[in-house]
Amino acid sequence: MNVLLINGSPHKNGCTHTALSEVAGQLNRHGIDAYIFHIGARPIRGCIACGKCVQTGSCVFNDDPVNECVERLKNADGLVVGSPVYYASPNGALLALLDRVFFGKAAPYAFKPAAAVVSCRRGGSTASFDALNKYFTISQMPIVSSIYWNMVHGNTPDEVRQDAEGLQTMRALGSNMAWMIKSLAAARSSVPLPEQEPRVWTNFIR
Ligand SMILES: Cc1cc2nc3c(=O)[nH]c(=O)nc-3n(C[C@H](O)[C@H](O)[C@H](O)COP(=O)(O)O)c2cc1C
Image (cartoon, rainbow, N blue to C red; front, side, top):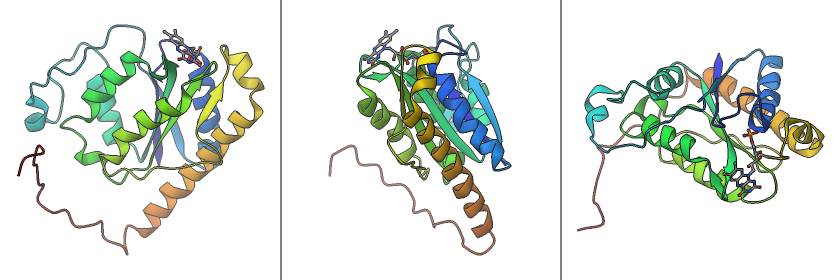
């Protein structure tokens, strides 16, 4: 069993990484492999809405980490998306990546447990947390919760390490993610997945 943890920050070993490492450590303690995927600091294009991925299952652009992320997520049992807060929102590069990882490609992600983690200096954490959770709730991904909303505070990794409550929230998230993944695996042979109706697509007209 394995969980993909996306670090959406341009800083490989910054505050977001510090939070995700705490989640990963707890997953490991419960016998679950954890892979932290750093999206890097190079440009990531926004979705151009060409719709090609609906037929192929992958993005037409191969010059950034999107398609690797899609493949890793298909092969993972769970997902944690970590983001720094930029102007009370997830950072732009991460949003560009997530739009393209999810648009037209999300069917294989259904029923994989998911969680968002945000890292901020001071404000905008819950707005960012809400924005990230929306990728999961439109994709039939059960959200894993913790003992508080999944946020850490600090402007440096050292400051994040002083956020004792934030780190405890990360550890509880790791434990709860491990429990949900194992529970779903145990249920797989006896509880069928929900039936899927043909999709209705109404664009707000009758
Ligand atoms: C462009 C930019 C905008 C930011 N906006 C906010 C903000 O709205 N609220 C906040 O608390 N911190 C804000 N910050 C601080 C980062 O969220 C904070 O330093 C973050 O924890 C860094 O994570 P990282 O080390 O993983 O990159 C901003 C930082 C940058 C670079």
